[in-house]
Length: 368
Image (tube, rainbow, N blue to C red; front, side):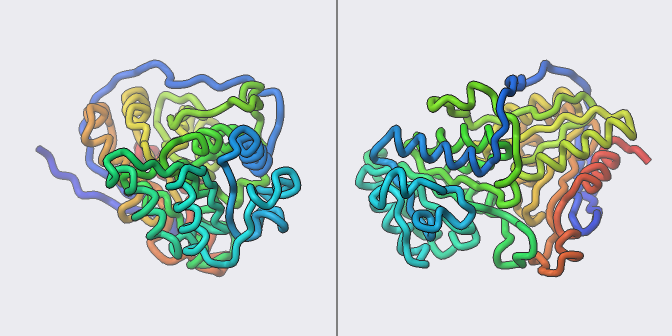
């Protein structure tokens, strides 16, 4: 055994944590290939089209939440659905997350397939008993006789200027609950394919979107435009690399790709960027393969540093054969360990960005 102290670096307010590792070398073949692109679509459009197609496909599917119908959704994700499918399928509710989430869970237990929209996942705390104790556990507690097929979706994590009570990332919270699946889309293709898969999944699925990605446009493949398109809950290589693996999810994929470009141009470092797509089930095989390939690992998330997604990734890597392939301590880049500030100057310091990721990679590779 050897002992090395975990070291923490405050990097523009965001936190980087280092873990001790052993040394080895290997290379494996890439995990995935990108699909050819023919069309551009925003994340908002991808979500809207996915919901519309699933409503059209299955009469048991309906969407319920605050302002989802007449107002077309707080973020216009449900635009046009009321006119097309009517009040039976697109249901406006009072401002009572505990109430409408309980109604939806009850509907799911009776065989319907609700999509619950939270205007913010911070508000899901009002309904967490229904999500965790009813939706997630009933299938197990009934001996497999009672399924609860439903989706909980909406914006998650920090936006801009919404302060401490509206900025929390719940990926680690819900990711710790047996019986739930937790998905974290980045691109339009992710949003479309993963949401359609979630709606068809017989298990309850927490679908964590990012408000700041709704208006972002992405190229999508011809395959992704098919009404039958779904994605597996597997990680995706967004950029091939050989020197270091940057593992992240949702909006931080964008910052990781920016960081990878900087690293290539300024330091001749080839960074592999992994988009997790799913928190639960976590694609541990993808983590192992990329660590074996690059021998260095940096995780990036906007959650608090304690008990986060990065911590789980580190544990999974250290408990697997990937541990023996690491040439340097794993670096975690996280949000700052404080309630999210309202002041813009402080808010900017509280979350990772491309320069923060670059600094963590340089630390991992011992670049001055």
